[in-house]
Length: 127
View (tube, rainbow, N blue to C red):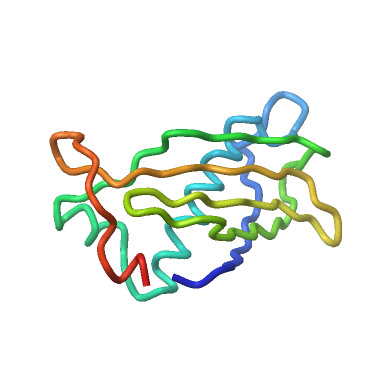
């Protein structure tokens, strides 16, 4: 998989709180968007991954809030693969507006089957 991938996100009104700032929980959704689009950029879809009977479940997540994002901001989400193990991937994220980093975070996702048993990542992901 590529080491770094970026997408743009325009903050929608429904993602904000009463102060028009992005609600803190939505950054985890943004992180998921980054992982999904990184996979797509590598020529695979998460849907096909699930159709093959495999799922990526989040086992750990961290988020560090440095500055707020607001309604209608155009954000850049940078997703980076930090580590790939036999059955897990650790990603790091930066949410950027202009030249300012607003939020950083990490997730660890684990590959499981339909019954929730840990499975080895497909060979193309381990590459």
